[in-house]
Length: 171
Image (tube, rainbow, N blue to C red):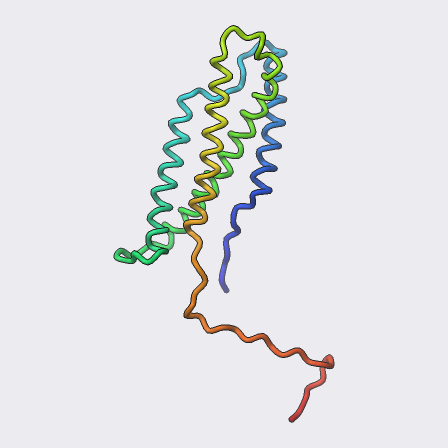
C-alpha cells in the first residue's frame, strides 16, 4: 500500500488567512477598547520568519537537486519527507501571520490620518510581507519535492468493460 501526502491547497491557505484576519481584527478591537497595545509581533520576529524560510529553501534545493538527476549523494527519504512537512508548515504559518496582521491593518486603516507616527503601520506591513514570503517559500519548496512520473513503470492497461453484470464471455 502506498501512502500519499496531500499537497497544499491554495483554498485552505486563503481560508486560514481569512479566519485569522477576522481574529486579528477582533483582537485589535478588544485591545483598543481596553486601551492596550496592538497585538502585533515585534519586528525581531522577521528574523525568525526569515530563518525558517531560508532553512526550508536550503532543504528544498537539496531535494530538488536530487530529483533533477544530481544523485552523487544518497537522499535520505525521511529528510525529504520532513522537507515537505516543513514546507507545508511554513506555508500555513505564513498564512496565519499574513491573516492576523492583515486583520490588524484593516482595523487600523481608518485611524492612519490621525496618527502622528506611522511606525506601527510599517511594522504591520513588514510582517504581512514576511507572512507572504513564508507562504511563497512553502509552496515553492513543496513543488521542489514532487517526484515526476516514472517513465520506467509499465503502463497499466484498463480492464475491458463487460457488457453484462456477472456474465462472462467465453470464446
